[in-house]
Length: 293
Length: 194
Image: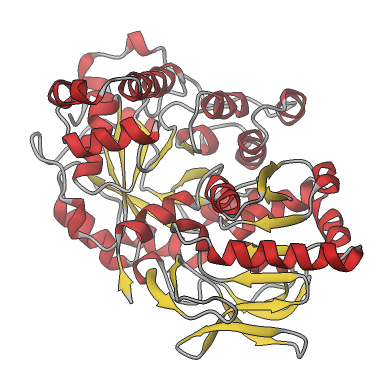
């Protein structure tokens, strides 16, 4: 009997496919998310848009919030640790969290090294803007990838950019001859063996979700259309006018992402979505997607 | 032979790959009308609360019950096992309620307790590499249910006529022997109909 194997960790992410993972800040929101059909919840002290508004250093959530959420739902509970913050991750693992997110939404604790994720029984999800980043995180032991997007903006444009870029880079690698892969591994800054896997399979060796800017059912469906395995919704649900309705509608639009009539139906009378931010209005320091490498 | 994989949420492509290795044609099922053209149905792993909710919303509860009542085989893994059970511990309502068994969700604990192990399964020649992910257990079975496998004396795979369930994930390895077993069940029912 073996726990924490790569099959068990990656398999857990595979069970989330076609699903919606929702940010929640307390037990009550966690129950709303579960009742709406979320496949997991991310327990946080503040959603990304509040982190933006508050400024300062954003850290791991208070363990009380994480425990409170774990107590009230039967679906998996995820939590975020700062990039490179080994101890925050170990603390969350000790609480029994089901999945860890080494997240650029929080202020990075290390500007050079990410967490050695192989040193954990609990699996990790990490953000990526391109194929190089995705494969570096997988080398470090990430069992699931998500686009970084631009969290807390309610603006889908960055998530679209990242998903399109990763997929076009995968197609390029897939069509390379084997002798070209060595130079490409050097260009991307990734391990050759991992790149060879991508070349042969035509996809990442782990599931790839969309995150960072999903605010409406149509946004979620767009990311599925672009090849995402599922979606994370951060501020989009509990910063909308009617979280319950938004949550249910996003779940249904994700499952039936090619059924446009259905998406129209679930999008009716939802109320106001979260207020968005135009990306060009953000200064370089405010861009979370530039955190990590 | 056409086998559907219920594609509302969960590990759909893995089951399609395994059932195709076992020699059947695999189809992702998103609409209940698709059941008409199928010889068998797999309900995959995923989150049972999500899958159950979407099954209700899109008319799959009655459709799958009718499908099974025709004697057509249904195979549920992990969350699929949960939604097929007559009774779910701690929950008032079952989903499909097809199989005469009581199940306990997340019976091994949280993700850190998830594991893989070699398992003997009745009807298979070789032990199977079984992957358990926040897996359920079968805590009680009716007398028509045949226990196919146990782990630490707890029931982890069973069959009742045309219904097959496992609390582990046979679709996460390259071993497709349990999928072959399921295709044999389909062949037997087809032969009986003729």
